[in-house]
Image (cartoon, rainbow, N blue to C red):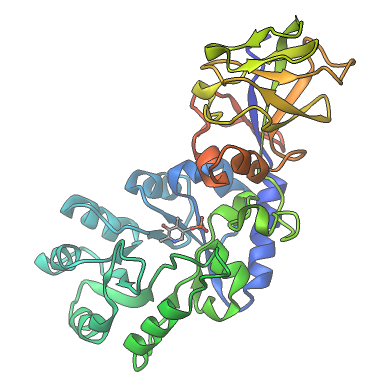
Length: 364
Ligand SMILES: *Cc1c(COP(=O)(O)O)cnc(C)c1O
């Protein structure tokens, strides 16, 4: 038997989540955001599961190419645009749509005639202060793009900084966007997962959900994935490969940070930070052992971690351990570890074998 760690990708959950998002944004089309190897789920695993998606959004040019090469003909939006002239020519050749966010990316589009015109997503900064032109420049930029024979069409694009935080909201960014773009009769895309779920007036022409597609809530535990009718798209599991009986005063793991206060049984699980499990997850982080909730004990090592099986007498070597997934929300693990579901799913390491639940076997 190989090392027992395994990530299972639930194609049915991906389809379910995509359709939940679409049903909530009726009238809008959706880019399924599949950057970062589909948030760690495997680009082609996810594309196959939601092959009817209206479009895909990604950041890496190579992943856009992989989607085209695999036969996906729908729109593919490069969310950060292209990074050089070669990519620009490639985008024109493969009909990738591209964000244009600064003078350099606009000048590149004006430098020479492309083999085919491209769809441009004019990225406006409405307060996130990450990428984008100052929003008030939108009318002048649109006029400039409309005179460019390389431009097949223009969509206005912005991104919210606090759509996931109800106390902060999105009002200032919406006001900025609306003031700048009032007279422009153009398609619009604004909404990430949080805005798609929380603010219907942001849906416009295209929504751009990422995290919710994978069954993690953009609101963390404040609005759980379950309450949003989202299903976990990944289960990360392993097994207990060793058992230790502790007496009061015995320590566990590197740094001896956990010391037993009574006699305990500890299971050693074949999963560590080199598999993508967060090293900073503290004692008490939830795990599911043989279907029962338990807790992490002591420091996470590179290849192993320890779980408390004192109150699980039926648990022992070979017992299954779910690190996150269908029985234990990734958002609970993330909250315990002081991070977000995004970071955990993106960090699942290449050495972890991945299978798709409906039988296809792929690692992409
Ligand atoms: C990653 C990304 C998204 C998706 O965000 P989620 O919070 O995962 O839904 C949407 N738009 C842009 C520009 C992005 O970079």
